[in-house]
Length: 87
Image (tube, rainbow, N blue to C red; front, side, top):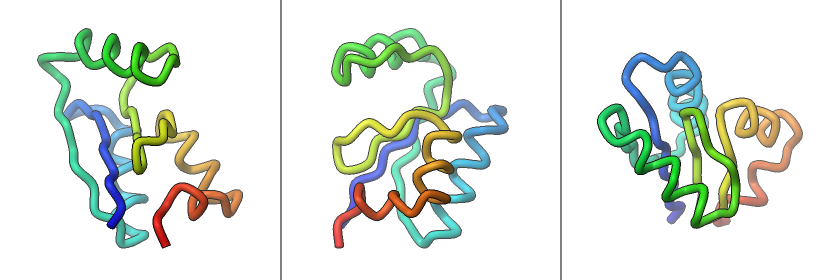
């Protein structure tokens, strides 16, 4: 089973797009609303994955850092998203 975590805020349009794409692909995810803990989230992800983080959404699939919505969309359109998913 895939473990997909998406860090979002309620009004973020790219967060909504990312959740819609994941849902359209039949992928379950755990949403983490970071509206009140944005700074902590950016620090935690930046340190854990050695990536600068300053926006939402932040998407992690099976402990692999994906990035934001445009990164997720590029993987999907490029046919590489399955490389991050368990078969």
